[in-house]
Length: 69
Image 1 (cartoon, helix red, strand yellow):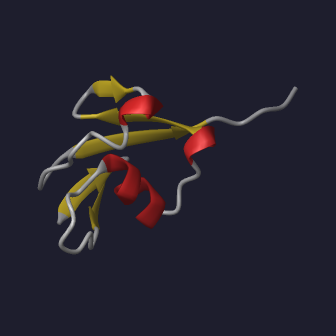
Image 2 (cartoon, rainbow, N blue to C red):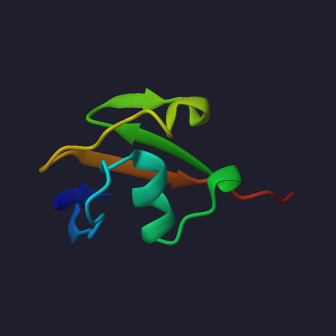
């Protein structure tokens, strides 16, 4: 399945399972506790990642949270 992640086209292979946002983030190498995710211009609460099903062509914006001073 092709999706757009931070403006770049990515091809993810989910297999026979549903294309859940949580699975896609794991495949893309993101750590859940350090990011905020927007799908098609809507911020998705991390509690809903296991229920959010992605579709071909969905647009994700992923922002990493960085601590520091």
